[in-house]
Image 1 (cartoon, rainbow, N blue to C red):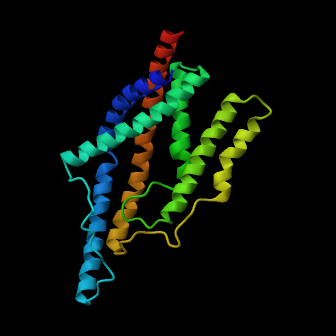
Image 2: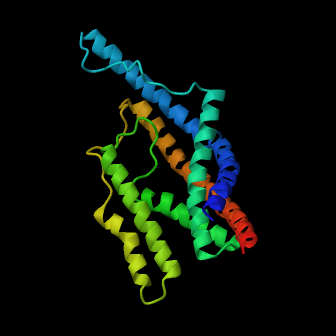
Image 3: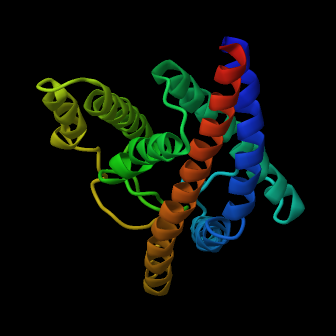
Amino acid sequence: MFKNIIVNAMIVGIVVGAIFGILQNFTTTPIILAAEAYEVSQSTATETSAHSHGSTAAHSHDADAWAPDDGIERVGYTILSAILTAIGFAMLTIAAMAASGKTSILSGILFGLAGYISFYVAPSLGLLPEIPGSVAAQLEGRQGWWLMTVVLTAGGLAAVAFIQSPYRFFGLSLLIVPHILGAPVPEHHGFANTDPVAVEALTALSGDFIVMTAITLFIFWLLLGTASSLVTAKFLKATA
């Protein structure tokens, strides 16, 4: 069983991840590149200001910093990252479907929607997707809240779906706990680049990024859930 889950998750992850990565290069990546341009311009301005005042504290160079070059290299790393991500999510989805025995295409779509809600919608209620240059709360706090939200949302949805009444209210209560506690927020919302023209452009880019991320991930999770249902049904039938 475990071997079947791994093999089928790799198949689903490679196919769905490749589609997801290609889709990202047409939806979210152009927005990220546009935002990075403002981030670089702000960094250059800060460096120029610091050097003109004889200061070295305001800006520092990181000789070890690396990022893929724009073009083929960046596209390739985006697709590779998407494939690895899809394989991990496919393992979780296929394992859950195999354990529940629900392998119809409708079940796959519902599992996909559950993943979309757990990993994107619920966390986005407190922490919206951010473009480069956004002012954000401390990383550790955001990561902790995101992980808690994902776990409780997935657990809550599972309880609602699989636990009989009257205990389903327990699942519903799990869904709201992270939002009662609240996500960590920065002291000041905005962007590192405070130029009025840049702020206006980054605000528009931020809105576009949220929309494109929501659409892209919705497609990703529907494809992942559907593909997972097909392979799970096949290997369960073969091992029956």
